[in-house]
Image (cartoon, rainbow over all chains, first blue to last red; front, side):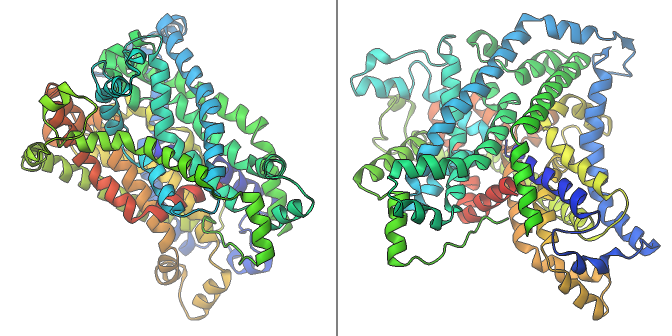
Length: 340
Length: 292
């Protein structure tokens, strides 16, 4: 999951930079960049090759190449041994797109995407506003709420699956405080399981959102608050008219990361619900579907095709999001850079 | 990498205005903060404390405290060779991954930030595109690639792909970092007779140390916690890393809940210690990566 914590903006930024300021310069003023504009001699070529060789080799070999292979294997019925020979054209894709189980998994992913945004966003903003107040132990609180993000999915999953069993600690606790009637089978009741999953996801990842929002809040210049206070704005007016709009860019990037993460969700579901129960409990995701019917069932061609579908869905959503939501951030960042 | 922001010193008038904007911290604030921290920590404490209980205690009162405290589970786990073998495997994988990611990532970031040549934009775009390929998407063919080069059940079969998948994040954090090194320093180095490579080793390495540490830690923690890739590549118990070990242990001893909890809490200890040591760097690095 931590792999996904990267900045689509930074990517766009620097690409735009290059387009605007011209190839071969940093955002620094152009005269300073001039000495670097010498022609590319054999020596420079050699250095470039030596320095970028290892990274390019590892990246192409273990990231790009396998992803391309997935697209190729997806056209075969193949058990993973020998060369794939049983070409089935688009048949795998036909099966995937008509399989009710895949539809269910896709539906769960969509639900998780939306519920993550709707639940975690407002709660995280609320906590960030709260923790942004001058208080003692603030840095300690900041560390502690981030702990779940650092603990691995396997440990979180193991802990929660023990805690949430029908005779587990959570129901025991409800019983103790006199709410025993609320006890449920949190993990296997198909009406509840997906909400249980949402609770675990929120617990694990909300610290990340809070930390991001807190950093964004601290970057808002005090002058703005002063001006608003002098004009007689109340606390809530200030938050609504100054804080929230300025939180926008961070909020939109967080939402992007959250969406991509929700679409690729695998570890937590697989650990808590195992590979077979996830479907019946109503928490299967596209990724658990892929592993179950691909690798576990030994159908590597089919599994590859599911991977391609998963990838295409993520890509489309990412592109649409970047085009329509992140665009104004990148434009803002660009003009900002150009002004400097 | 602008995570560390400089808060301007507050004059008293300013303090009044900001306290109105940021809000004061009354008892309610502390209460909600305490509640939040409680919710975040209780599941962790459940795992840690559960390891100090016996199965009989857990069965009769699932939500109770240890009484009396038992060290047996922890001692059992700490004296088992399985646990230590998995710790060593995880450490090898995480150290090798982060070392190579940082070395290869720093070199290629230097090229991307400090050389101008045709195809540079394409090279950057190639790595940036890697952000769209999380390991989940590539896992099935990756398994086949690793199998075909004979690295199944070898730690190398996990290390090499992990390096590949950690490179995009590393490069995206490091390139702006290296670009920010003033051109004057490079000129000065070149006047003093240092070539590009000399500049790299003498100036860039020391100056980029904070970025290097951040990316190294992110790669380390990511590797320490990674599950899907080892699940596919490492089928032999002798090569298990800790996350696989936790899962194997919890299915093998599914009736011995207390011991599972002890095993689980010990296996999260290294990540927690590491995190508390480098908390500023990890948090700052993530914030920096997102803000760009």
